[in-house]
Length: 126
Image (cartoon, rainbow, N blue to C red; front, side):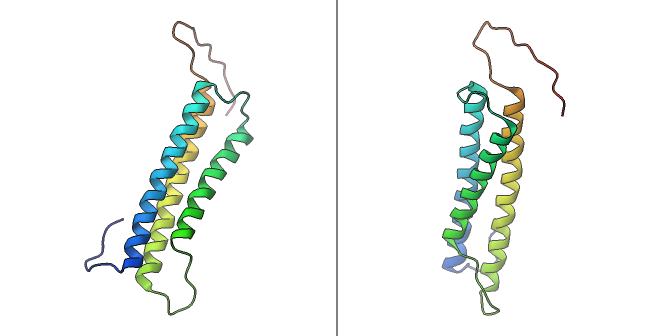
């Protein structure tokens, strides 16, 4: 997130740091899950199961953000903090869309073969 012109409040700085850490964690979780899918470590994974994994990873990211800075209520809430929270939510939403795409691609591709094996690709309907 871009810093403001003046020094942000400690709450805003903490929220920015938490948002960046949350996005990093979300991406790490997705990379790990995609690797498991590609390796075949998770057998007979259905599209519904992939959707649940995506939902769980995204929910965990949102929970981490909420723990770092619960939504503030009322007109007296710090406007900079509210704006930073909206930016953080946008970052996490974008990372969640990216996670969805990565995991779906890994699922559609299926497990990688061992060296020397020939891979047969079946046509799948979209």
